[in-house]
Amino acid sequence: MNYSCNIFHRKYIPISVIKTHHQSRRDLGIEDGGAWLAVSPLRKKIGVILNLPGTNKENAKSRGKIVAEYVKGEKPVNEYVKEIKDYTKECNEFIFVSAELRSSGPSIFSYSNANDQLLPHKDTYLGFGNSLPESPLKKVEAGRSKLMEICTEYKKIKMQRELIEKLIELLKSDERHLPDQQLETRRPNLYKELSSIYVCVPQGRYGTRTHTLVLVTKTGHMNIIEITQQAPIDPANPQWLRSEFQYDIEM
Image 1: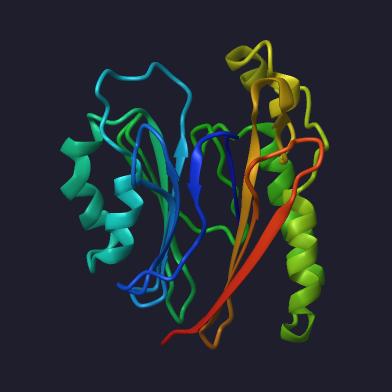
Image 2: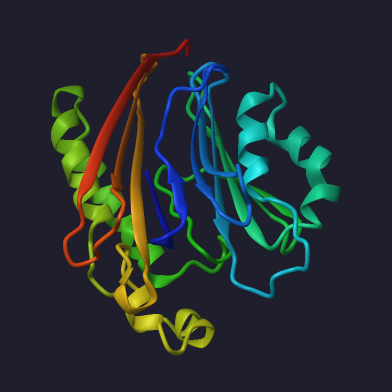
């Protein structure tokens, strides 16, 4: 489950089937051609990039290249991270979350170039945001708890449609999770608007633009659902486009 916040006028490419049998979610801006979310049913990999706030580097390299190259390649995440470390030193700070799908359960890791740490994550329910995993924002903690509640209640295959709608409802939640000292210190003028899972800052033409769900059953059926705002975006009256893709993968 993933959502993306971005500047509303930035050019955006809807999810599409790529010839190499992977899918990516792209924004075209400074990091032209980069992807913040990529899924490969063939390689059984998922990669996500999350920005970390900080000073932007001059002539920074594209972070979006990291997830795209990861899902297309055969290397496991530990080998891949070693290979790209020199490259990541030239990128603005980020968190890279990887998932490799296996019959025994997903193998999930996070890597940040802010501290050069590759961390395994073994918990059943996980949440990541725009902060280091060991220092989650309050809305990430709240979202993880709600995710556990939803998945516990709607865990049967026959309840998948209900599960999807409840997860989308969570992604669209505008409940503010305050106080959050980390967020208030980082963004003193916008911390209230940024404290909800669904973000909308009309005056800044910024906010949540896309929701993506990737559901995988034990038998290997993958369902990718994307809901994205259609341009031109009107924050007061958003028009949403929904797309679904399904695959059967070997587990």
